[in-house]
Image 1 (cartoon, rainbow over the protein chains, first blue to last red):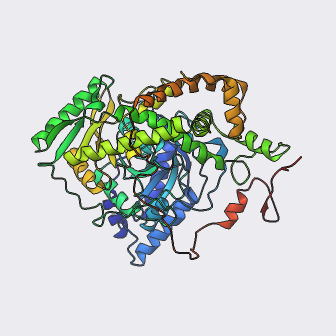
Image 2: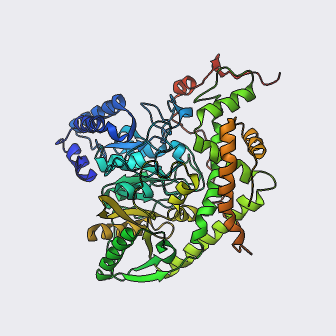
Image 3: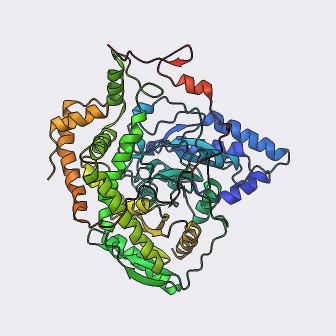
Length: 473
Length: 97
């Protein structure tokens, strides 16, 4: 596994003319090629990446500064619309789709000189927690090929851990950055809802969809958040970035109050994970943090809320795949209705269909109040409980998932068991608060991680504390 | 416990313009009943006096200036993605028999 230098150092060397962007891209592409047996990558963007690398090298030669990510190769989850190759969201219905525009997040990374070299595997349309729902292939955990890398951003997480590129980007609707970061062993940040534009990202559940970086260090995640965040006229749900940015972090934990969420430490939590978290909590105590036991009694309801709201929004967002404008189209249809229903039947995988049916049910007349509206009411309770908690503590701490990475096939025939993998990650999505995964240990030859959460728009503060935890590991 | 019969599933599939195989219909009928049973735990949560949360950042009626923006869209790619087209327009199957 290749260990890349910190991206700040790489871009500095490129801007100083000591490293060539073309060489960096070629190196990343050959690493991708050499580790294809992990199935982390769906496609590479070789031609365009090398063209962009040449532009950057030439810019440096003519004395220009080519940006804070000059020449840094990266890998995007394949639900980010990108030029230079297909964007499939790991679904058959989007096979062959060449995006006519790029996602805003990619545009921002490119404007600082970063180069997208490849697209990472995911659960089709980001529906899943293991990448086993990809219509193309199953990504393997970098630490154990018999296990899943987590999901849905499993390919992005595995890419970073395998060192295929210095960083990757993913999406997190109910835990899809944080859970694979924990299973595979990298930093995974889900920022405050709205901080990074969703424009040009294949929509899953629009009211909780977030974009975030996956990196080896907290500092790199901070830089990437600084670059990708802020208002975007193409996504009206975006919010202003912090006026101080996200680069200068306060990692002093002395006197800070950290709440241990009681509901996150129930009997379903693996004792190995519990022991590693206890160790870290003791280190934080020694470093001067005040540890407080805290209870958010509504949290056990969060997953039920999520599995009403998520399919509802999914069924609505997936209605655009009608076989008429892009993506798979059933050619032998006799009329338009048959073209719709056959294109969708043959193009969508089983999980997408399952969610469309659940979503259609909970939104249908007569059931809307009992399911959808009720879930939005309980969501208010979740928002309020977090708000109340952050009045008495600076951060909330807990595990990311109840177990370490599970075996391939272990849960793939039981959708409810798979949904339960998100039990500890969905609440921050429903409340729109930032949360981050930080690997803290290795046990049973697999990573163990913790999840740290902060109040809405406190992303800089969250990253500061995450940096401290990283130092204490 | 909420039971979704295969007939219910087919009705939902029809509303969603999605054709299902008999196997999928049978499978979803039993699975979705289990999932709905799981989410029915919300029945017990007291939500008296609360308003529903549809969005979390407090933004309201976000508008932009009514001005043409330079949207980076590759028209050639847009057209190439069309499954079927004629004279630069989307061609669809007939709608009325």
